[in-house]
Image (cartoon, rainbow, N blue to C red; front, side, top):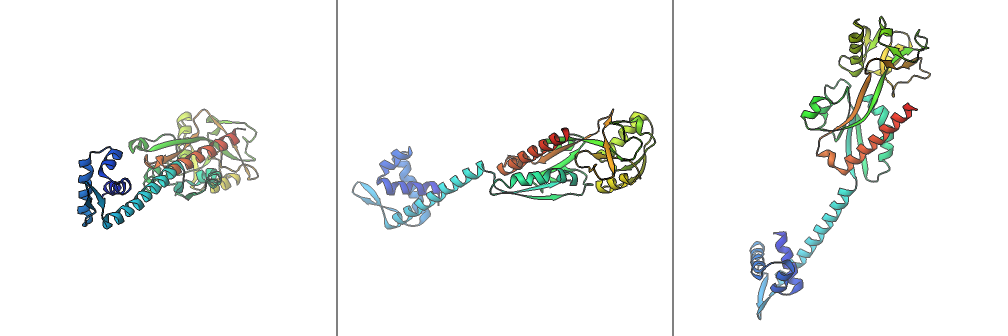
Length: 304
């Protein structure tokens, strides 16, 4: 049955006449009468009967009018709940990240989100060799990605991109290395060094290509590893030097030290990728804001 017609029947039961219903609903008497007749056809029973010059509800009409009240209450409750939901971040938000991004951001983000009742994050990490983080956006509300900058594929897909921070990429050295006393290193300083590299195409690997461009000398790569923990261990043991992210590299009590690289842009951008519709959800917006706050805290911590 049509909800609007049920509401007119309810009005008739409470106001007592077609004239009063028409005045209250800004309709003509004829229009109200026509809608009541259509509702009778839908119900399959007479809902009104003549009484003097007017009409009154039949027993079927009175019962259906009571049902109409229940429907109206349910609709108002649904509207109220939806309005509350639309204003309040609730429900589950799915998030996926690359490993060092998760190490850097998730502890703080999970703590902040736990302060909002009814909001939860289901997080996972991805194989760092995933070709394009944008491919994950159909399956997750939030994708944390690292890249040299804004990638063309992100624009082409119409994704919402929120830049969280830029993380410097430093040179990691054994703590007894000949350059340990220097505050920074240039491309020329590093000619002839053996490198523990990252997989081809990773931001860390792109820095080595920049070194080759600046110096005109090919870099020597001894090994390549995905796991930065392995890279840290090999550097500390003296098997080579490496490019590692500043904020997540353990450089105290770990047998290695890190130094900034001058003369080239040695950074990676960490961003949130989302489908544009999911970016509008209050729950997703709340988690993204928590990510931004934690990213600012991380950057400030390492700036001091």
